[in-house]
Figure (spheres, rainbow, N blue to C red):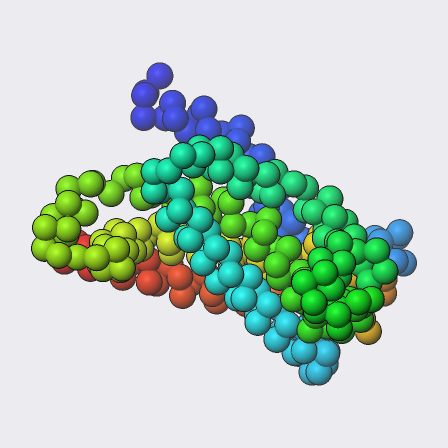
Length: 296
């Protein structure tokens, strides 16, 4: 057997499985987005071709644009919050101090929490009657938080969900960046110290430029994850109050399983896919620019 084909033969089972689990659902979603597909269609397999009707109805609905704004603003806030928290923790862990290894293990705990379990815990913590968050805030003198209903306003509900998402996501970023820090030669920092560079100069002139490709990749991954957030919002608010915490993933799910309008739900999912790809293309452009600059 030609050794050139051996890797492809070994990879074939995994590639077939990946294609079956990703390509087929994607094409099926595209197909459904052009059809009127409801519970009757699901039971009988009979559906009607409606062309772009699902897309035009979605794009002319003001609520879709409200949900899109929620998704973009909340998603980007989570991405930047996660990246900043992960970077600060990675910088802390990269310094040698007593207990740093134990701290490195402790920060991984939120990451291993299932999303649903984490959402239930945080919903309990911010319960207006028996939540520990209100208790602690009132104990330090902030009495206005006594019985404060965090989930009665979209703004405060999104704030709680934001901190929950960052809490659960930053360990992966921190561990990844810590691995990146350890690939930077110490000689660069030693040379910078000889030239009189302080800690800020070493971070901005050596650490961040050296980690730029890794940071861009982590931005891409965080964007993909945070724009698809569903579990935590569903567990903590179910999209309330009055659909005020809806994001596109929850909106698509609601159209499919509350309204039983699978065609419309597929159109919303495809529009979310296009929105996500827009941000991914921007990141990839900067990543290629970075590689091109290095080659030049």
